[in-house]
Image (cartoon, rainbow, N blue to C red; front, side, top):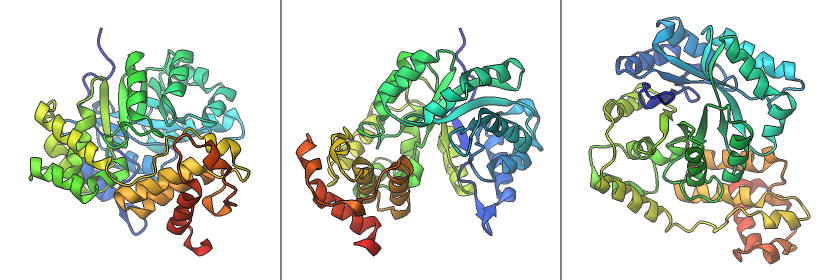
Length: 376
């Protein structure tokens, strides 16, 4: 029996971070990137209703310029964003069809499932609705993207065996991360024999510029290879991975990815050892040993997003990228209905509950100094 996507080359063009010119997507440079991608035999493009301007741009750069059967287009439904009714969620799909001009969607995803977001898809009966669109020929394959725990992923796959694939955040830095659970989620997807589409293989670009000692390990092993290439090849090497998405933002990034993915070969034991060495080096950095058990959250009288704050601060410590770390804090704290670290009253209840014996109050002060200096 053939596996879904087995004839699709493994590199996918992620369209969330397209090149910009004068504050809008640079369609001409996007066309050049599309042409390079297609000429190399790659055909999978990933956009979303929630990516501003992306669906319009890919219509102009791809759909209007290439035969429809020559590529696969994926887009997504984020019913938890500004949808008061099921009809609002349905309209997202209609908008995607209109903006892409594609006629049908090859891979349609229920977007960013996990935590409270999943309930919206349940309430709007979106699981059944996407199957109805598939029966009409408007969708070829249905799956979902996911950001939460492995246990929750397993519950979803048990409840919805009709889902044909899953999209997961996998990379060598998050592989054993207690919050993201890359390896654990990967193993669940494999358990249920679901083809995997990988997102964030370079962790939003941070693994293109990891800590210097990590970069030195990769450069010593192969001076000619980009540091980012090791991250992409790590996930492309995993069994069951159908496509690895790379959110390329310029022609240079496209050319780099094509240089090593056009004829991708499985990693050698020596190359796997290099990545293991880099992972070990990352573990040496002085990050907060939070396992996101969230026992602290259960006793915090101010509802502070403690584990989310620590995840963001750890990201800043490891990669030195303030914008990415601040985005994480906003997403994991504010967008999850939690108070930020400035609200801490230093009662100490969190520390009494913490099984890792973290000095939470002192660490939250560091969070304030890192992200809220105006309130420090």
